[in-house]
Image 1 (cartoon, rainbow, N blue to C red):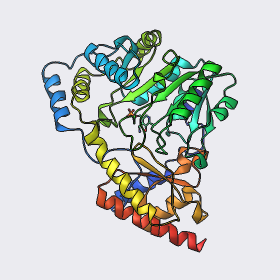
Image 2 (cartoon, helix red, strand yellow):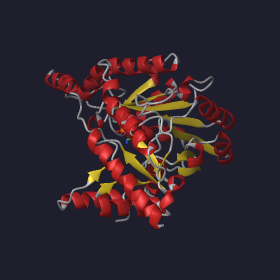
Image 3 (cartoon, rainbow, N blue to C red):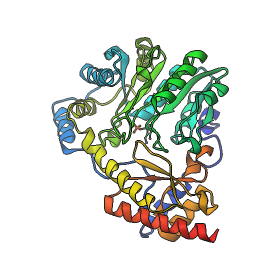
Image 4 (cartoon, protein in one colour):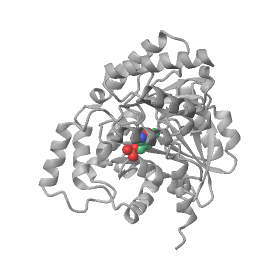
Length: 390
Ligand code: PMP
């Protein structure tokens, strides 16, 4: 039987960019020791207090179908969080609870893009973006943000690609680069969206992980709340990746239509997960969960500051570092494979996140401080040797 091209073309042909990751997993399965700096997942599990709330809810009977848009108390809590952050009045009618940020990315593109629409996104990008855009029948259009510009996108470059487009997807704090968009960049992006009548899909799943500057949601900018769809998640802020819970915040009309999409796809999120999320949002754990990454970033800056072969792209947030290894003359993929085979350290090649990150590697700061520091020292020494040999 033939499968629909919408499904079979999801990854756009070619490789999925995860070869180094798969190879590392193979080596680990074969008993080799590998230092894993590939995946964006905390080295702590979900806090026991959150699990307690989940358990109490499930045992209390919240195991049936839950309200499809989300339980009112959680929608209210998300609305309050977003209002406090952005200063824009936000109510439960502006909030849809989703099974994670990824589902929210899919649903927001469904909302913004008709069949065949051009959907812009910034390169380097989180690996699922192009496939998510294709999955709704839209055409992914990357817009490069250059390393030389700290991986901040330039509004005029977005504008030049915007003719006939329906949406723009941005992500600050950024995975994979760690860039946090400053106000001028965000205002420039907002102006392009207004001029070109674009939906702005703002992936803010790392909003609690900001090491320098402050998180600014474009929803807070003048005239933007009617065209911004915010994607949020508890995955990164509360170490709840496996619970699959996030949200969309946007205009009430968009949300009420998206509830219909939720009804025909996921039919909402389990009630006990929502109760756990509600508890978590009130528990004040964000700082504690972000703290290890803040520490490791400081450690990395110290280590990288002592050498000049590996370049650190100024990272203001998220749990990653983007490192420039072009001094070796290698591309990111070749470097990452060599580092894995020769040093047993697994990192993601920049090329996995788009062309703009070629010649770079992404390092996830997701192992314990001492081991992280030691791995980074070895990475620097290795890079220096390769650069000398180049
Ligand atoms: N956006 C970005 C930038 C991410 O890095 C991730 C997860 N790695 C997601 C969205 C999706 O997260 P989740 O579905 O777990 O909320």
